[in-house]
Image (cartoon, rainbow, N blue to C red; front, side, top):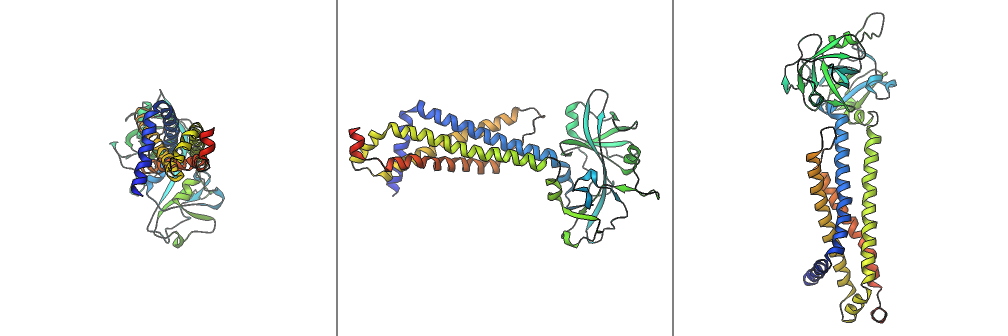
Amino acid sequence: MKGKGSGAMFLAWNEIKNNRLRFTLVIGVLMLISYLVFFLSGLANGLEQLNREAVDKWEADGVILTEESDLRLQQSILSTDDFDGAGVDEYTELSQLSAIASNGDKKVNVYIFAVEPDSFMMPNVTEGDNFAGRGEVIADDTLKEDGFKIGDELSLSSTDETLEIVGFTDKARFNAAPVLFTDAETLETLHSRKMTEADEDVVNAFIIRTDNLDDVEAAEALQVVDTETFIENLPGYTEQNLTLTLMIYFLFIISAVVLAIFLYVLTIQKISIFGVMKAQGISSRYLAGSVVAQTFLLSLAGVMIGFVLAVITGLFLPAAVPVAFNYLEMLVYGTVLIVVSIIGAFISVQTIVRIDPLKAIGG
């Protein structure tokens, strides 16, 4: 069996060497398809991170919102008295505001998160200092690429108040926009939203850490959701990921069809040769093995070249293009491409099995 397998691989490799141009075209097509698959997977991961970085930074287990908010942070209006921490290990309040921030030269859409300085949501500072006073913010470091720097005074579209960047943090984007972290007092100056005439303080959500969300004791008007569910309900998050994933799946199908057509045409052109080989006693199984081995070599070469080109492309893309490669995922996609290519080759295998040596030679 080992000898037959080695012989089939030798036959496949020998034919590839003798028909370099023909098989180079096949490898080129597979390379382009795999390149597109890898690039789309990187784009999907990059866009996913673009939406959820700030939430992942919380390292929280769940979020408490109002029932009528439809799991949207900005639609949830809570009193600070609505939850007392029953059933959780840690919790903190979160208030947010979206605005357009400008340093005089550039304008960007931002989210402003009010966090408690001593809570687990306080971001790590990679450059500069923590906010210590009213009007000071820690900004996501992607703003540096837009020309923002420490000491910049930021004017906002929603208020006459200004903010000052005193530090930067990494990986803090929410819903594709950079986040500015500040304290509750600063956020209150940006919008004076109050819930009742009693002048109660309001927040958008409670962020919690707990081993079991079922143990959380919240009022009926509130809902407790795990962090992943909250992320999946961010505007456009699920739809965006589903679209790119479907494109990748369609490329798998296209890869199988394209390779099947190529190999079928090549097989038809060699029917007389296969007929002679069969007449000499070479089995259909051996010939079919050579086609499968040939397909494996071609698809492996195409996938490897596509992988290398995708990674190289990622190194030279501007920061504005959100591409992030997950190498384990790329390995899975590459394996799937090889498998579906081999599946597509079985059309040619069926053709070889049905060849009648006498008719093929006579033809």
